[in-house]
Length: 372
Image 1 (spheres, rainbow, N blue to C red):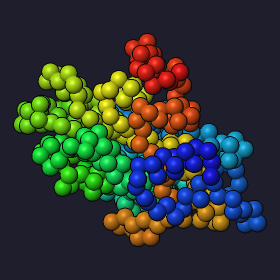
Image 2 (image 1 turned 180 degrees about the horizontal axis):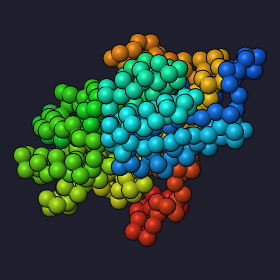
Image 3 (image 1 turned 60 degrees about the vertical axis):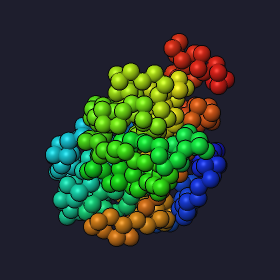
């Protein structure tokens, strides 16, 4: 287990939750497939389809990390054909058809709409192109899936929110749930995980499925919730990701709230890390994008080259989609990020430098937690 994964595993354990990650050891699989006859050599084209740009992770981390790993695994002979759908399912269908027409060797797909993309996945299958679902479990005959343990993400968020409310919190405390897009299967899993912690502990006064995960939609939803509940009666806000948390903060400030309630998040975006330091957001869920992207690249290259032993070692779990059962999968652990472990997570993993986080505006907050 790498130092990064050891830190994450320890941090998850510290949340007092347990999860069975059968394939965790697959992250650094040592099984050799040198004796196998590769279906193809290093000269390959890997298609990468990512869903949107509102969440900065895709352009800033997933794509460049994935591309670098493919190049390193193929002696720089392999190339990545990349497209971002910008939250448009129709555009993604066109991008996927283009990759099929271009006869790429494998497609790694993070679906805008997991259900709508099923026809495109079938077309790829018919063309003999394997499809690996990345981050979101697409429907259709996909060959493998890699993501984080999404229900655990929601559990970590829900548990953290209860911890922030404190021992004196109870069923009369009203919270708002700002869930992700209804077209994203991950959002359903985040919500289910969070509800497993929150139900019976607090009152969910308002709950929204936020169209396209857009911060401006979350801001509008939050403004509506404030009008309905009253700003002073909202004790906490469950936000499924950091982008929406930013919109929620704007809505609360616009309503005149000066002492913000605990707000969750996900993705450890730079702006969210800074909000956490400033006390405007309670926590985020840190997901190691290098681990997800690098292992996805390994899966894709192994699939193209016919290295079945290596591929199987990377996909030891099994998951079901609405259309396909027993899909080979890898689930990557997550960790709750608060102001107390910024240095041990996003800084230690070189996601951000301290100088990126501790700008002049946040210098005092950084000093308070000895982040330097």
